Length: 328
Ligand code: GRG
Image 1 (cartoon, rainbow, N blue to C red):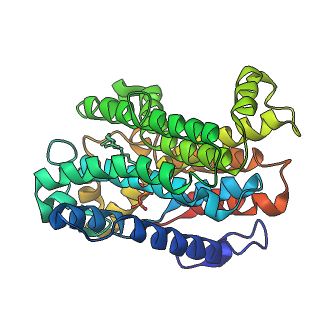
Image 2: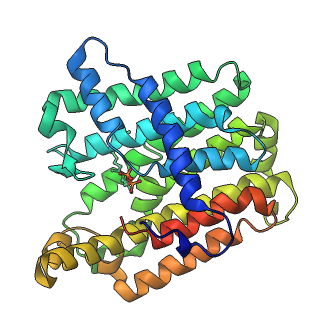
């Protein structure tokens, strides 16, 4: 949303940072999907990939890489990969057999324009292209062992431990009332549907930026020490934690926006209709409590960044504020 002065936690100009990074991400994505034959599928892929998302995931990936001393170029192909997977999941999520949505980012959904068959394939193609692009483009910049770690991290975030698991439980929850569904189920859905990919984006950025395989494994073993600041451990798990917070925060704000937008645009009763059948935080714990939860998550996410170089952490601190206060 247009006002840059919401983020007064530091003098960091987050709006410019976001615009700048989104521009480089868009340019890099554009190169990944040239118009070639067969034209129809390539057009379908380009349409959704370049349809103007906020690029939050690539941004996280780049910021996390920069946090540990890497540069933008090292993280870029991984950042693009994460956005391709995100886009792939959105195309499939919109299909008639899933959410059956006509609009995405204010434009007709992929299957509305290109047909269901092409939309399924466009999603498949993006999933494959993500891994191809990430491994081929970065092969000269990042050591093979780190690349493998990053690929594992990304793959895990997609399958039955990640996005797919979240989507399955979400689909199965459609007819359950919030009273019966419970907060635990809702958190499972969003930790898998939303937080997993946000977390992967950040962790992959860290891996690309310098964390070696041995370090990561050491960190895993000593996970319980993660609260000891100044340790490499803290770095890795601190980042995992902040992105779990951010992942949930993202979803809580999404749910709040669903309610407030639909009530603003369509009137109160219509707003309720839109929410009917959908398991959301406001429906489960109310709008007021959802807003409080968003505040807490935003604060907790920022707390995880204490102890880092404030200059390098500034984009991530600002990102937490942005996600908490965003309006779309
Ligand atoms: C084919 C990879 C793949 C997965 C299959 C369909 C599916 C399993 C999962 C669906 C996951 C899904 C739709 C999660 C929603 C995540 C979410 C919060 C989307 C909105 O993200 P924003 O606000 O969107 O970042 P923009 O448009 O800005 O990119």
